[in-house]
Amino acid sequence: MCSAGIKTGITGLALGLTLLAATQVTAREQATGTLPRASSGATPVGTARPILAWTTFCKSYAAECAVDTNEPARIALTPSVWSLITSVNRRVNNSVAARTDQEHWGVPDRWDLAEDGVGDCEDYQLLKRHMLAEAGLPRRAMRMTVVIDEKGEGHAVLTLITDRGDFALDNKTNTVMAWHETGYTYIKRESQDAVAWVSLGGATSPTVTANR
Image 1 (cartoon, helix red, strand yellow):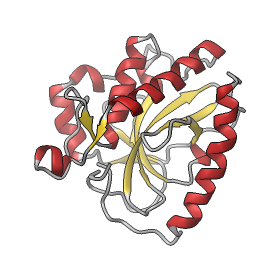
Image 2 (cartoon, rainbow, N blue to C red):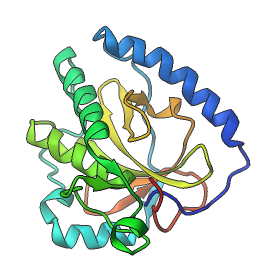
Image 3 (tube, rainbow, N blue to C red):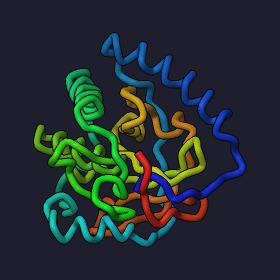
Image 4 (tube, rainbow, N blue to C red):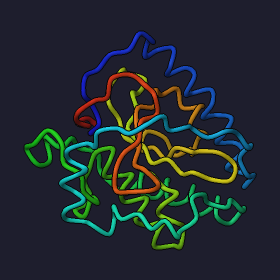
């Protein structure tokens, strides 16, 4: 999914500077193992149309999309859990080679787990979720999320819903940030209650995610 060419009224430079400042502060905290400050999470405001490539992905990887409502809806953050999250985010970012779906597969949008070590934004995040779920974190509390990024383009992050707020895992940075510190406009994410999507009240949704 990573780019739909959708522009917003906020300049990429302003968002980029905001992201840089927030990243520097949060990176220092993560280097010391400090738990993040608690904040409020994003609030869904209704249903949303799923990304077509996600629907196709779910047909091939049903277990990756399944929602078990018996799982916790929030991750209980402890220093060890936070260390696991930041480690997986960094490891995947450093191990997957960035390439658009058009370059990689010859199609505008395709979601997978970067099995060949190559992927774009959503592939990074799907792999992170897979690894974190394998490590014991509740998949229900880790939701694929569509945003508008600092370039005004469609992008995918992984939202972790925790008892200290919502945090975004992003292939653009090794720092795990609170959702409201990323500078992104949040459009929609996977539901926690069904194999479906919910709106986060942002701008018009991109239809594909196609850059890195």
